[in-house]
Length: 112
Image: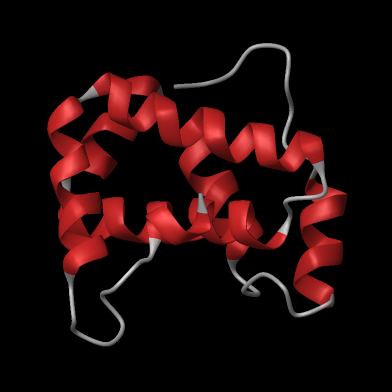
């Protein structure tokens, strides 16, 4: 799930975090995930709470950084890779989209 040819723009993430557009732990969560091996990424994502967490981070990046083409492309490619790697993960995104429980809902369709 690592993307050749594109490195995460850590400085830009810091700017968005500093402006309050992204959560303060965004960079830490993304770096942690990207530093895992492919197999460790899969194991991480197989735990439902971890999958939800990384999806929230990535969709927040899409939502808040739409004018930054590199950030948008990075987040969308990683989202795509997560679902291409294991298509059954889309069920969790659908459940988050449908959820009426506060803190569990993610309006992925509205963001995209």
